[in-house]
Image 1 (tube, rainbow, N blue to C red):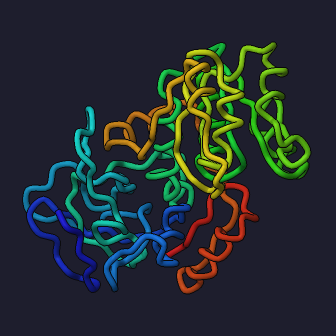
Image 2 (tube, rainbow, N blue to C red; image 1 turned 45 degrees about the horizontal axis):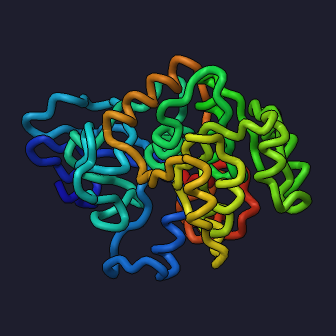
Image 3 (spheres, rainbow, N blue to C red; image 1 turned 90 degrees about the horizontal axis):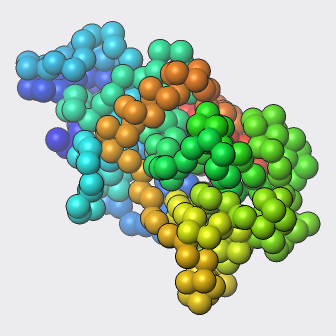
Length: 316
């Protein structure tokens, strides 16, 4: 199922489709590969998320027809159920989506939500599905804590609110705090003014804590997440953007009774289920900025600056 990147007019093979890529989006993981922190083979086409339209189909295709609008699955060979072994990913293991055309097995794609445009839909495969997986089990009456205003955190805020949960958010500026409240956060904590924000979460919840924490900081924020989590709650570890040596106290974690689970995106089935939720609630991804294809490196630099609020997208 290794994708190829053809010239215009290349005909797809059996079970494949030719996709005209209209947009791709950046994730923090892409920065690690672009700057060499995570090695990938020379010449590997980058980026793991895209949206486009099917321009041709090969023999034996059944899932798509010419003209269908699609997004790719972040974990290409994980179709559903438990993932027993690490799988392949675009950019890291197989060619990515920063291309004009892609020939790919149709099983690696799903239809995009009809109410979204290509720019919006291109943000779904990694960040949105990661947020959806991190919120597994959330329901009305639960309290969810999200950190910052990156793609995963904003998707988690929107999806948690759609599930009837209360959302508390952390951020570093009042401007971002106002936007988080507009998206549905009941309370926003400025972590620069309140570095021990775990205690503030407990105060805001009458000492109950957050039932689910979407942990994007990693070692630099895990200590506060342990302080903030409800007894027998869940910390979903999705990122490591706060590089720090503080780490975590295993004793404090044991006393919390919480579960720490590592989230690595989701399956094709998860993507399909999430798209139904997004469609039912007419949710729209938060787009920070769109760059033209020829400014892809500028898009990466903008994401690396940390100035974004939402997703950074490249228009093809």
